[in-house]
Length: 305
Image 1 (tube, rainbow, N blue to C red):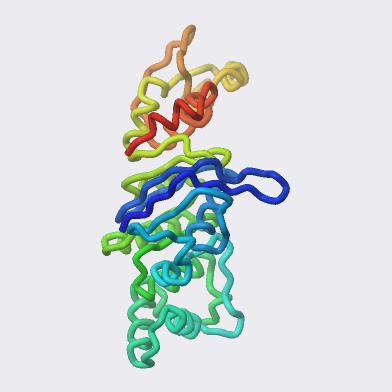
Image 2: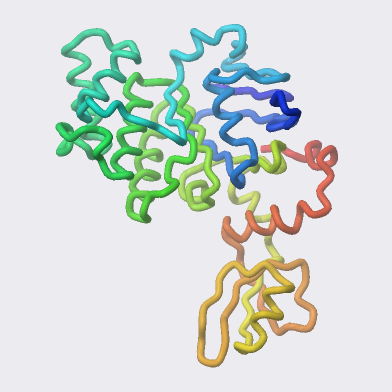
């Protein structure tokens, strides 16, 4: 698949520009859209699934204009929105059966087989008789992804799928998405959680205040932070002073003080050691330091996969 987003704009009636000249190209595999809350991620997701019309720009899927062929394009999509609700009177298998019918599986026997296979795949077969709205948070998200993929869509869009999940469920959900991404599909994962991107996505984009400020691979983003992540040991009395000067990523207490990992363009006056950054370090560095002097026109000309 090739999803080509060009100069996409969204302006609301109150004048707020939620998206500003967004340009992204997405292929097969898992693509991560990372950014803080309010960056415009959900707006972009809703435009992609044609639940919202853009104010300008275009989206083509394999050369077909999304806005001109919305009905046909919707048949290619599986969608898990951030706020996903279940019908209170349907058991888990009944809800998935209903989703399969909406996805075009009309034959009752084929639909039954598809539902049972999908419940097994997402680890919900043992609770198939439980009412969907009575499942745990993690089970609901797994049932949500099951309804998104049961029709064998070519494009799967998931919006903030791990928010509110405990660490075990978050890992389980990421592994499920990674497994699905091995098929011939494009998966777009929108999240503000860095770990969701680092563990599963081959390519990514950063969205900030409606603008794409980076796109490439996670390793390319990490390269942006090399030489700017430090480890520093300080006395306990110096913590307030250091925290007022630098972005501290982690604080580990040690006898008489703290071991810190922090972000800075320089560490003059401190006996600090440069360490290799991870994606969380890179995200904080890019958003809090590199973009302080960011020129959107200049940056946009440099963006590339």
